[in-house]
Amino acid sequence: MLKENLVKEIEQSIIRNWSYPAFSDYGKASLTYADVASRIRWFHHVFEDCRIGPGDKIALIGKNSANWAMTYLGVISYGAVIVPILPDFHPDEIAHIIRHSESVFVFAADGIFNALDAALMPDVQAFFSLEDFTPLFQRNEKLGEVLEKATISCLESGRSTSSEFSLKSVENPQLSSIVYTSGTTGFSKGVMLSHNSLMANVRFARTYMPLKQGDRIVSFLPLAHAFGCAFDFLFPFIVGCHITFLKKIPSPSVVVKAFQEIQPHLVMTVPLVVEKIYKNHIKDKLNNAKVRFLLKLPVVNRLILKKFNDRLSQVFGNHFYEVVIGGAALEEEVDRFLKKIGFRYTIGYGLTECGPLVSYAPSSGHRIGAVGRLVDTLELKIDSQDPALEPGEILVRGENVMDGYYKNREATAEAIDAQGWLHTGDLGLLDADGFIHIKGRSKNMILGPSGQNIYPEEIESRLNGMDYVEESLVIESGDKLVALVRPDYERFRTHGVDESKLTEIMEKSRKELNSRLPAYSGISRIQIHSEEFEKTPTKKIKRRLYRTV
Image (cartoon, rainbow, N blue to C red; front, side, top):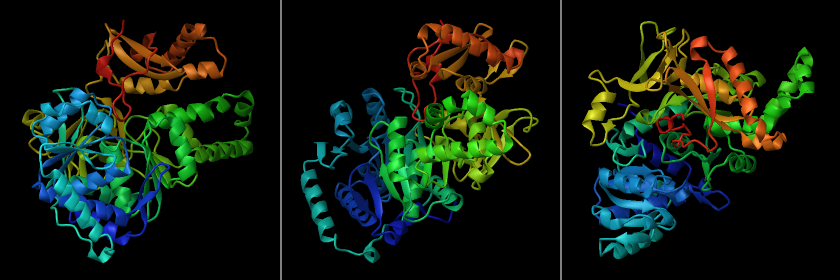
């Protein structure tokens, strides 16, 4: 158990940074750390008067916002358990999670509440608007009096100083949050994360990631997901940063605009955003005949690579220490290019069950194809006879690991063995220098006709780097491999290429791809998938939904 305490760290950050800006919704006025303290007091008054006890569950549903962040802090600092729910879940899935988690309060965006039937959630005492914290539905007749009393109390204490602010102790072993990893009604698994697990992530980030008081952050990864919550919110808040939340759906164009206006000091992102920026801002120029010729000249080569680095850095606001990429694999072509131009980036690895961090290396130490080294609060084991050469399941144990799945002993026993090892389901290698190399998910591995292990994620990474491929999914059909490909229709239009040549272009890409692959992992055909693939919150394709025709 760690000596550092999450709630005390929150308290001390508020005291240290009292007059500094803490949160802003994009395009709106900032709230200071003192403002956050006042709102936390309000929550605590309301919870206490409504007899919410430590360990009671409170659900939180909505897009990233200052009110989302303050609700989260108000709940966990009281000793209650936050249940963050992704706003893009279907209403039936949201209702299932609220019931399964036994939530007694729900803070929700108004549009989400309107799609729910409160009568089907009898344990919920009240629904609150995430816009202004007013009640949308209540079973407690005295709630209005409670809210008024809490507001008056906070107004009276509004003139207090930082030295008067304090939070009651919440011990590290206590449950902090239940994060549901699936959006399938009836099959969602609630990952139980203790205060200790969250503190382990914050502690590591504060030690090894370059942020300081007053630095700026753009938060666009879903806060209801462990990656965004830990590194776009909790860690920067405890350091004393100013966090701007993007409430809009974060398309690459929206994100880039915000980067250039706010100029964040640390960027947390997923591969899809980086790959889009690479294709839209870099790839066409690399394919230019004149540029390809100049890149062969030693001195000119360095100047051109520097220009690419400068251009890409401008896209991200040009004030960042590094760009941290996580949540899924990065295309190999993009990884190699970023490394070649000296871009300040790194790739980490984690999973919700670790709150989420498992491995990381600073941008100066990033190794192509790797996802960093194990964090200092975990042990690691590769379930393989030769972890350097033979992929095996990645097993971890330590401070970050979840307490289990809420009300699901069977799933917990399958995930965490008797020795405390968490079976991640990811296959990987561990090189001589301690870098982890992810090969794919164990459940996705395909057994070749002669017993060879085929990792579809590796093939997809190469295929996604080819011209006019937006994204792809490699699956087994009979004893052959087939690639479902979503074409990059935007590039077709930009380049003025007739879409009637789509089949011809894809067949050329298939042959080129196969020339780089072992014969047993060659693609037999490409099947066009015209719609965008359905994805998880971290932009991984939901593979189980797709089959060939």
